[in-house]
Image 1 (cartoon, rainbow, N blue to C red):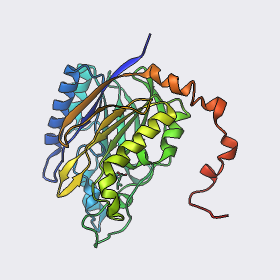
Image 2: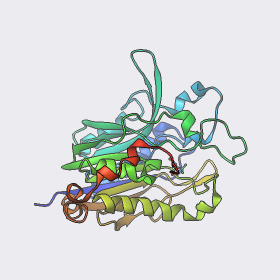
Image 3: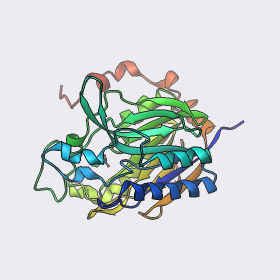
Image 4: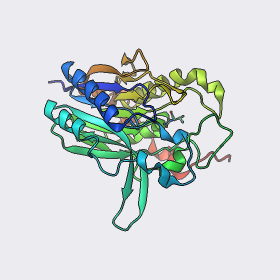
Length: 311
Ligand code: CDV
């Protein structure tokens, strides 16, 4: 018997600064209902789905940015989405900013995705591992990418959870560019990786990469899928948000590395595929039989060293 999972990448068009969470949640519910009508069992939303991509602005006092963060999930603004999903028997994966205040009084700000099963049970909340951009105000940029000011990098790394009849992993945006992200999940037997993203077309440190944004997006997710024998679901918040044009190109990639479905617009759009989780074993049981063919004893630099060392 094959294990089939119908998944929907619920791409969002822009979320502007003046859009309320209630307005955004309405859009998420519209996508959810449509995905359910098409047989989806899991709906994956983008990174920071509930708000505009606020790291594009720097504020001197980070407390002024607190309103962009959730302090609990679900909460008053998102309860309707969670209720609708559970009522329909559809799972969701939702990206948002989380401000955590611990019992010891310490405050932590994370860029997260929460995965919820079809029965409403929270499977896991994943915190973004690779935080791109800059820590300080860089006034010469046309727009900021101050994620390193607004978010801590996760100390936990990449997990894989039994859910949806398979083994599900998560990563967020910049994580998808790093082969280590996929491999750490591959070594835990991942069968489907869920990844929300916000990728401005204009890459300020090196504009020669602008024209390659779509190519690089597909390149990393297709190679990560193939080299680890896993499905990858990449979900954009695209279009022109507060004057910054961002990549759409949400896609579902098979363990073969082939793109099986891809967005055609940069607006709210569903990309749906019926994914055979057993297809993963065709790769992980043959060419990428890790236990048989990998050589971890000669890969020690990968964890022992961070940057390049010339010997
Ligand atoms: N949200 C992101 O992580 N964006 C990065 C940009 C800054 C390059 C990305 O990797 O798409």
